[in-house]
Length: 202
Image (cartoon, rainbow, N blue to C red; front, side, top):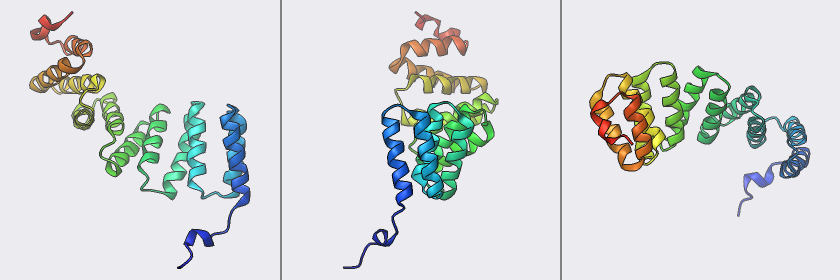
């Protein structure tokens, strides 16, 4: 029986040692010290993707979006087909105000995993933020398909169609949301100025 290739790879003990220290410090809630340990782990093995992801996650926990983005961008350079990391990168870019780069990352996340409703939602909300309401509606339609009971998604979809002057599509969003989240549906009725649904307001 041939020896698996991973068994032939030399163990990077420095990376492992620093990484274990980082795990312990994270568990103890000492995030800054954990970051330092994982940075040491990264220096020992700059191409270890899981270390890069962890550094990105730890920076995101501190809401240091620029630093998180840099680590996660490096991770997708090394593993360009990893959908969860693309989503995390998109989220960091979105929170950090890097809208165009966030859109590109959310789009890549949906290409790699079309069933990630949060990626579709993030993409739709960014398009809406920039007034691209048809693009927003297209992305939010996918998010709504994947999460039919998520009232916030359907509210955003209804508003996207409202800004596109598509009253029939707004009606469909209202009817759907009334069945699953009446309170959010009422907000959609108000914000989309649908006086024909005034009888459904509380």
